[in-house]
Structure formats: C-alpha cells, structure tokens
Image 1 (cartoon, one colour):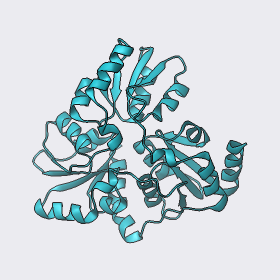
Image 2: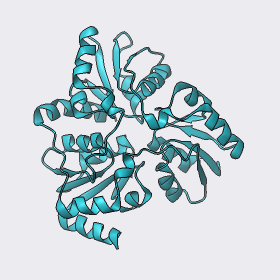
Image 3: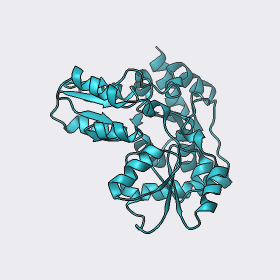
Image 4: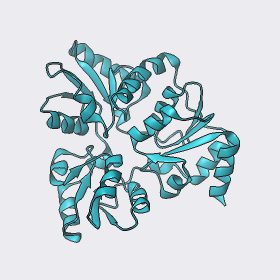
Length: 299
C-alpha cells in the first residue's frame, strides 16, 4: 500500500512530512502535520527531524528551508509554484521602496525568498492583523504582494497602505453571486471566506478567516452546516475533524492547480530518491530569516 510505503520511507529517512490544508486529502492523510501557512511556519521552526518534506507550493518549502538551514528540505514537485508570489520580484520591490523612502516593507508570506529578504517582516492571513498593529500609525507601509489581504487588514486597523496589485487567482475568482447562490442552497449556514478574496466578497460573507481560523470556527460553532469560500482542499480536514457537521464549498471550482501537484506518488518518489531538494542561497536566506522570525516572535 502506497501510504504504508511512504510512512516506512519517512521513518527510514528520519523525515517529517508537512502538508498544507489545500493539498489533496490523501496527501494530508500521509502527513505528520497539516496546517495553514502560519501553522506550518511555526511547525517548521521547531521541527526535530533530519529531513522535511513539504507538500505545498514552493515558497512554503523555501520558508521551511530558511528556518532550518542545516536540514534537508524536499518538495514532491518543484514546479508547484504560486502565481501570487510571482507577481512581484525583488527588483520591483526595491524600486517601490526607493519611491517611498522610510516606508516599512511588509510581505505576505506568499512571496519568494528574494522578496522576503527585502522586507522588514512577513505576515500570514492568520496573524496579519496582529502583526500590522505593531506599526506606528504615522509610518507608511508598503504591503506586497496581495492587494486583497492588505486591503482587508488596512480596513480592520483603520489604515491606508500602499498596496501592490497582486492577487490569488483562485480566491479572486470567487464572486458575490456565488455566495448568494450558496446561501440559497443552504439557508442559515454561516459563510466563511478567505481574506485573499476581493472586498465585495469579503463583505458578503459572515467571517473572513485564514484556513487555520476556519478550522477553529468549525470546532466552536453550533451550526450544523457551514459554507466555505476557499480552496476546496480544506474541506477534507474540516470534515475529518468535525464529523458531526456538514461543510459545503461556495464553489467546487475553487481549486489551486499547484497545490494539487502534490500526490502520493511524487511524495513517495521524493522520499525514495531524496530528490527535489530546496536550496536558498544563504545571502538571501539570512535576510529573509529576519523577516520570518520577526513574524513568529509576534506570537
């Protein structure tokens, strides 16, 4: 059985398997730990293993490597990228910083190591409000690359940020019309959406939460039915952890093709061949590490 083979290989390699909530259900089941970007960053920072296999997209595996420079980090499919992360380069960020001298450069963790190295601090969708509240109100903030998360946090804190025009194609495709249709199908069910969604979609929902926040909401709510507006991979974890509740996607088409590149077959192959190692040049990693560790230090 493939799952048994993966577990035997992980044990023999001294490996820990981390998987994002958006991965395929069977990949989540093979992992030692499943979580959102913040949960996985915290887990990666404290992992005790010779090898980390990161089932997610490339920037996440980079973050694990930056936090564990002495450990081997593998990714099942090195082509599993993030379109949002690719919407800004380090050079573009340096040009933006030159136009706004003295401004704080803040990046969503969904960014490349090179972009993180140009920033003071990172945020995730799960801790962005808390992290951004640490900045003095009179300091200009450059928020990259996600304009939707940046606008969401700015609104919560009554601030205005310089927003880079990046976005997640999966979340940006969600519409108010789709939410209204989901409410008709499941009357009375609360609607949860991710902060990467557009403003009108966020305003049409009941809650705006990271996937980790959605998991907490699911554990605590009294609702029997919950409508979920994020990548459909999260439904596997929600249903597994809350068997007494029903979870309905706003749209079955909310699929991240890059997350789905992680399969049991290439997870097995990565462990068997110790292949697709993630390498971050130390000159970049050292600077990016500062931004990530500052984020983690916020709690």
